[in-house]
Image: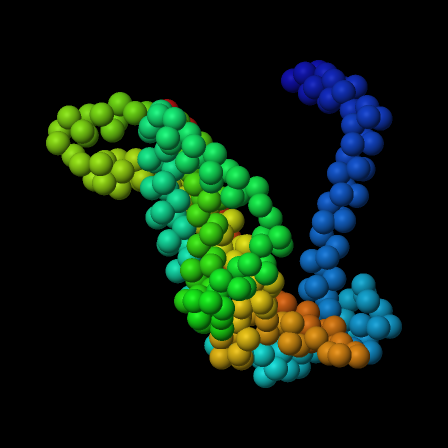
Length: 286
């Protein structure tokens, strides 16, 4: 038994080369680069402005909790949180619903018309948002949607195109025989989609939800252009208003940032479990 163990450890020692050591060092360096911003954020929220200036990366001498108190007083957290939540999840429902339905119609049809529809969506998806800001603002102003929450919701549903491309590739992997058997039993197209196909799209739906929530929650440019009043503010706009004209209290800004990203982190942790469940269930069922 001892001889077998010695042979095992010696074989592992022979496999451990300088190349392996170099790769481990590189991975440790990359890990430190990734972790450093989070460490800097964590230690900064418990420091005073003077302590942060003297020792930016050091641990705080004491836990200074007044930053969170000042951050809560400076921003309209609950109002901004409610507006951001309303915009994000109302657009999410619309994007998932219409994006999946459009992708299903195009993926299950092979005619030239639907290929042209897909090409049309692709051309629109290739146009960057920055090149259309002025025309979009003029159209929003023409329809009276400036400084309106529902106006921004309508504008944000443009990400249906992104959902369309995600769903289309996934729908093609769903066996068509399942839908055929439902049609033979007398099911209509809407019933086939919502009771047969859509439940099988759970992994890509959760993935789409994570992408959409993270992009809309962190969106600054769109609310900055189309929402002007403090009553319609979002969390990113509130953080922007906390920036001073000549000086900035960085520990306070870090505390505001923690308040803003905390719901997003909790959502990601909650949704990640459903992605793993969806992938593993699909692997087991084959």
